[in-house]
Image 1 (cartoon, rainbow, N blue to C red):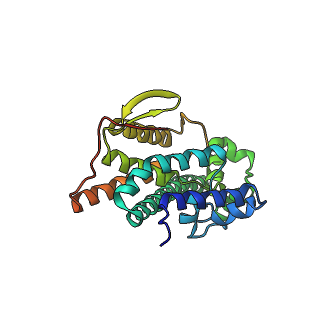
Image 2: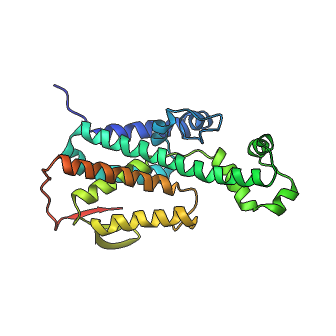
Image 3: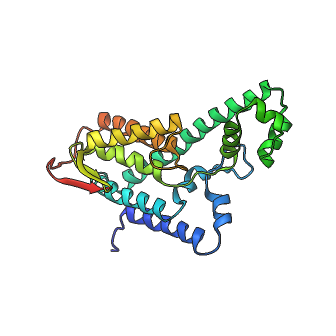
Length: 257
């Protein structure tokens, strides 16, 4: 009988293959166009992107942090749940994160679209702005340039990464091992998971609402929050359905992230 390969190892290998195809084999534009998650009204949008974007990443640091988080926090969960249940949870959190991210973007997009209609622009004129990124100076006087640029980015900038699924894993880890001690690499003070993980999610929510990011730009904060929310709802459902819990030593140390 062959050795049963862990789900996490399979996921990491798939992510690395997608990364290699994007950055080492010369298919970057094609990979992003096919597999990154675009705004639904963008011509590059396809429904499979709600899954495929989870295997795409924006650079070395991005894939390293996500794969480390998947391995560090997902490994005890897979051991506790088994491969099939772990994969179900992972993909539900990731797909849910993508859907919530798209919903938030659509609401923000529609708000700006309606503002432009109120200013007297027609739908074809707005579409022209979205296609070219150009608008006349009079519109710039009547409407915020920052919002117009954001409107353009919402339409054109694709989302990539397994972060939403990993945030779901983080929540599941916190629910299963609330007293595990976690610490950031640049702030190595151990904090119990039951405090650390909600704080991390709260920072993402704050950044998503205010637009002020503590960790730099280009982060899909609402995808993180969405993955965490789906992870929490799944854990809540499973906790009611399955009464058993895994043994855990509350004094053992958790992973550094």
